[in-house]
Length: 293
Image 1 (cartoon, rainbow, N blue to C red):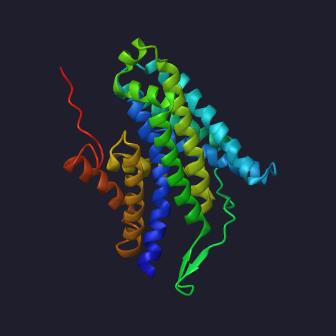
Image 2 (cartoon, rainbow, N blue to C red):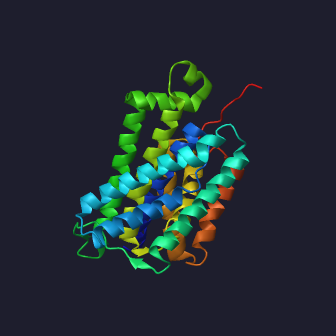
């Protein structure tokens, strides 16, 4: 039963990674850039929910909605101020800007909230499910996280396939210049992509802190990096790839922590990135794109 318990914990953690990775993969797939400040948006969303619940006394659904709204606006503002002026710049300039934005958000959080760890109360009120005579317990956080991940992925895929905005995103991801000539507002499409990715970051932050209740200004840093690994693992730019990569990475991390070493689990996770880049750089579901030169 212990193996099944570890597996369920891995799927739960992997579901959080998958939600974060969906934000990474959407931004990269459409804007062709890596937003390394994405993990800090997670942290901001967690703090907003924490303050709304504990300081303002708002109901949990309202607090989560407020967190999503704040992170959505933050993502759009970051895109307008930090990334839009560098739309034609080199990828290195964009990468440096993303790292700068990450440190900016971390230090703003340090100034406002302080460095002390805050205990985040779980937003999930679901009772745990007991199986096999109580030998296997599935927590409410695990159920809520997995269900939220599946629902989000299904909604995103439906949105991309059937909505006009989704079609515009697909067109911009293929060729932004041609999309603009066809009347698509490229700037608005990229802003919408950042908005969706940041909203997902808020949801992931709330779920992450519900399962692991220690909240600091650096809460989103490591999950953000691991979610990037998950996005590359599954095939960055692919929504199903982000889901599969996140689940697999969470399972690998928990099983490594349980059966190999808790100190080496992070090293094993990042070694997955190295192996994927060497063996299959496009990831599990990524496609090799031929470019004419």
